Length: 447
Image (cartoon, rainbow, N blue to C red; front, side, top):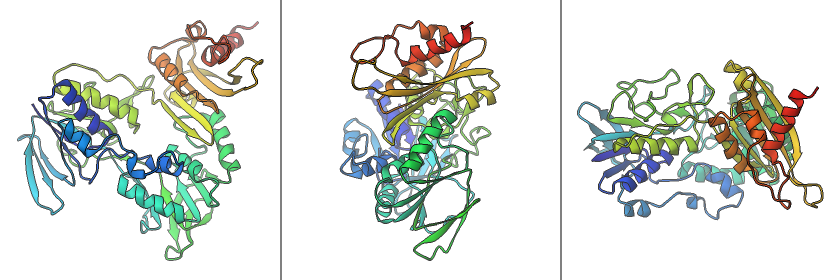
């Protein structure tokens, strides 16, 4: 079988490697419009935090390793036309020369465009976004030289950049149009703790502010205009609004209202020989009545595995997502899964929640580490629908447990009586998950 994959980022690579592992005789051709493969877009943060020596090292695998696995790849190849009736693809090389290639099965992993904004952006020397290796390398150089930087967007990218740039003697502004940072993943209890850490680090935090334009752009210190004030800066990073890149197929495949490609649980589009995955599709969210555009890599690679299996005739269905995330910012591990309390109410779910700060260890130990934890339960059924964690201790694996609990519709009572380990030098007889559920249970039934 001949399978063509458009896009060689997270999803395209995972699909290609899975196809070759399942059946090495499958002809797999990757078409990538850029000049490199497998660059991790958050590499710039890793480099700023000195977790890697070279930005170019932040890759899953090299081109040579990909070829060794039997995957053919066409770089600097921009697809211009897909003919789904003839099962052919037209692409252009760097010399604008057109080439045609046929397929039996096609996988779309075109991802999201860099960013979408209503603003007219000036020269990228002053205001820019980053995603691939060349743009990340360019932005890294400018960030190192800049003295006053505005970061537009208080999601993971924006907050992680603030953390990576703190303490360098630069003036940093973080601009977010919502009333809290990381609002897609955290409720106010935890986001307010992070906001205080941001302010304590010296970053000027602008909440409830939207960027409306720029002025004096010809000056070294130009102005970023928000709805509330004018900020002087010499560099701006836009870290908002990724959008699905569906331009190639919008005329012959069904799209959802949010612009993503409509797929079934097998990642199959309305054309049975075309599959789509990654940031061009929407994902079913547990406890939600709709699919959502959620550009998270963990969703992408799962969808790619499902697509590859079904391309070769092995039935595998995509499980729902809990949009599980984790990061380390301002010396704290932060993780979330499921719906926030705000989201649950928006979905029409009647919920109740508990927020606690708990010590991990027993009091006789000299080292004491606290965990901030929030759990959101559906009233009546007591099913867990969301959870959030924050601690200087690495508690990130606990969020996977909570994600599984949401997926299996585990109840408050089950979490209290769940079989979790205990070691007197590590934790308490009831771990943070069971203890939080226990305290909520007591609160509910206390006379």
